[in-house]
Image (cartoon, rainbow, N blue to C red; front, side, top):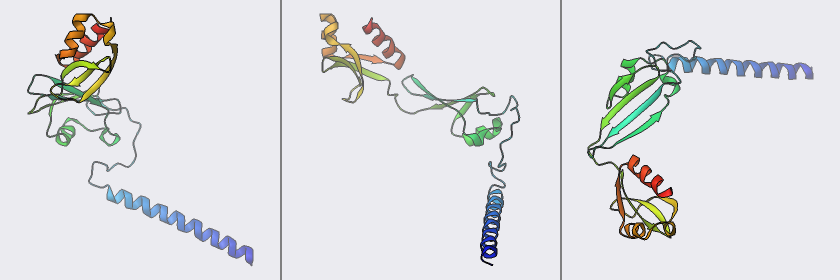
Length: 178
């Protein structure tokens, strides 16, 4: 009789867990109807050329008043897989889409401000340091010791060397290291 009770309790527990799991699954499906998440299962279909997929690169280009741009690249979230151009445009309606393919989507946004790509290089603890222009906010310390530079360059860094643009900054710093 004791074994019967144990088996009965175990069977009732298994039945309750199965019923709870099934009800949870059905509830989740009902909650996703008429949403972009409607399909709860990702299929292994090859995406068409006009759909977003897991390898689509999304480029966000911020265009600033001072003529500089900043680009951020992301991969899409899984729920975006299979989205067509119209769906993506609707989701990012504050951006201007300039390119759409299975490989790449490019968004542009004009920013009504200056970029942060204005720098001043000066000495910090014996090394060349990069600061954001017109501030004491340190962007990065370089590994270039001031002692390795000519006297003329040392004087420049005491006054501060202004550089505009990330690409120009990189070129200038590479020139110092050679």
